[in-house]
Length: 170
Image 1 (spheres, rainbow, N blue to C red):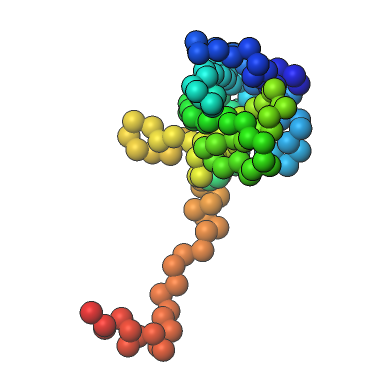
Image 2 (tube, rainbow, N blue to C red):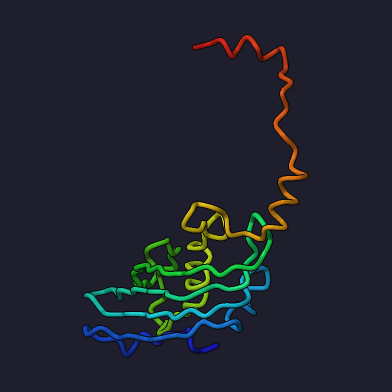
């Protein structure tokens, strides 16, 4: 997809914006990604500042059909995030960092696909679960919650006597 390749030669001191749609096909290149069904808009804002280009990337949308960590039912996750990067050209082959992307002097474009993918993945919650209702109860699949409660091992009341002495330390 050439939509995610931004040509840097036409960027002036005025802000330049690019609006990109991220759909399911975007993730086909990332074969190990669990993300398959998305509807995200990306706003790429670029402007030159002396010898660098400032890039601001804003993502807003939804990731659909992600399995809940508790009941395994599909849920949607909202993505609303942004990041700022600096693009610098260098005659030496420098390694890019989290904040600075180095390009060779002869490079006139940047592919944002990997950057967008990483931003989406890093902004997904670590624990994916259905939200609580207004009473604080889980909105997960009730049948699955009943099965989990039925077959979940309880806490063992037995203690290892070797550790009993440590319980008295204060």
